[in-house]
Image 1: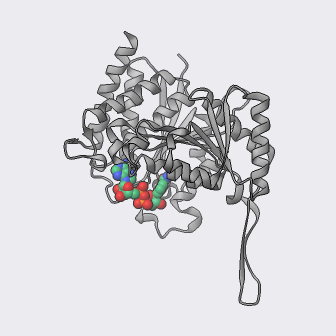
Image 2: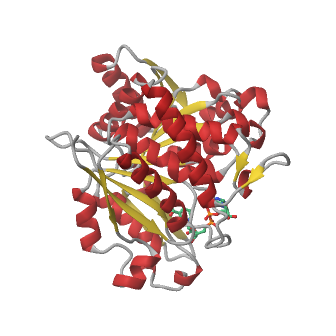
Image 3: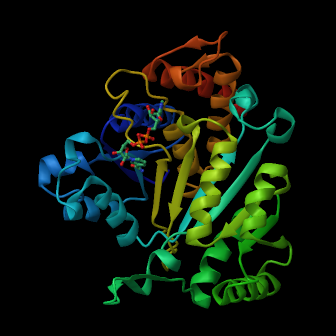
Length: 373
Ligand code: NAD
């Protein structure tokens, strides 16, 4: 078996607690001969400011470049609220994404049967929901030039940001979406505002051309981003993979996430371009933050971090079988009524972060035995 490596950056607040449960799962897989993953522990965010006076040390970045992927908890907290803006904890995360050129952000929105009541939408609309939003992460209006605020000298100021995309930026994120759709429901919905924006018109034309050239086996639909925002609430199950730009993706992925109703359940992945040897930079992290209000109390839900690791198994280690089994284990733990406080219901058994991790490992062991039989 090939020796693999991951860098674990627990970060701050509940980060170390939830990543502790991920490390337990990696040890379990290694002990059972399913994987041979070496864990390199390092720090980011506030923890790195305390240790290195910067939120991401060069030595940490070098480790992240070498490893197969990075697993991150969350950064930030009141302790570092007053540090210089350029070295705030979040700057470490932004630098990591930028340095690894992670241009595709994957945000699944899955409604587990046992948690269908947690959504604010009606059960019949969200039951069985399993969609994936692919957001372009390194281009568009958040990075375009010119940008800035200028003083017009007459008591007025002008704020400018530029929405800009090139064909290669559109094609590389489009490829990620089409490839992922091939492994799922074989349908991509591409969202922009081609009706009012030239960058949207280019996006639509380039995605259409890419589809015709290389992905005709996948169904492609186009949708205006505002309509997509409505359709996500009206009939979210019509979607399989949604691909969109940085700005619309920011909004649509948060909207889709909330269809599932629980922040402690939401995983994410950010992927870069494969090099000539097939190595692809990748960062996996829960969507939630460092939750300082519950940090250190054993209350944090580790499932978002665990489901992020399932994505790592699928995309970085090509072990879709283990990812499926781990997700099935999470599903069965929830079905059994085991819950951390954030997703507790009247009839459920409330457990700590560590107990939830243990319950997932027990169920995972069962799922692996069934797979082997
Ligand atoms: P948050 O996601 O940390 O918390 C929002 C609410 O959800 C809190 O009530 C928290 O207790 C709860 N929550 C979050 N994750 C949970 C989990 N796994 N289990 C149970 N409950 C959970 O967002 P916030 O309060 O706006 O931000 C707190 C800090 O986190 C800030 O410093 C912020 O900058 C940072 N942050 C970091 C990231 C990241 O690292 N990617 C993302 C968002 C916020």
